[in-house]
Length: 220
Picture 1 (cartoon, rainbow, N blue to C red):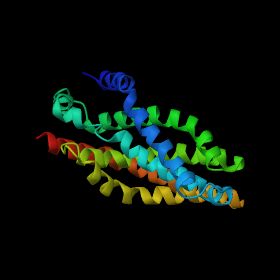
Picture 2 (picture 1 turned 120 degrees about the vertical axis):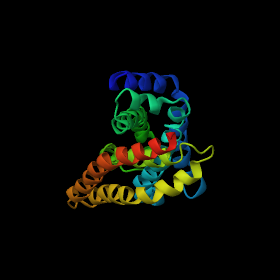
Picture 3 (picture 1 turned 180 degrees about the vertical axis):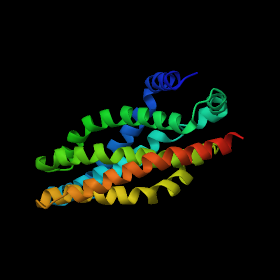
């Protein structure tokens, strides 16, 4: 067993379970469509809030995309096999999260222009919104992985995962939407991007470690 074989198996699993990603993307679209239907369809209301709505929907959908990502690894003894074969659990976790993120973000970015049109998102902010999602969503997935590892042994751990992860999402949400708003106002927005990249680097180091500790404790 090698890192490549484990990640190759994860890729095959992700392709076989297209329904899991489809459900999270459908949830993303449904959350966005609720705003014009349930609040107001007026462009004067939707346009200023459109990027924030897209980001809130992306935050919720990312948690759904990673819910149960480690559950089968615990139940079938995969984590013990990784350790027996000398694989670092943290590196395997990082690879699994990366694969889940890629399979989620590619179709999500295809949907964003259509969702932006439904929310009256100004065309000038479309690329800024897409860029903010590219920079910010990896951090969301790494944070969601922590919640998924903590709740991996729970049958109904979705609520606990939300309680753990949502407070961690707030800085990413604030600075991502702040970047789009700064671009809209024509003021410098490099600071927000720098902070998002800093969050990514920190979670890139800490998240696999915390997930590894939690999964090892659950496997013992």
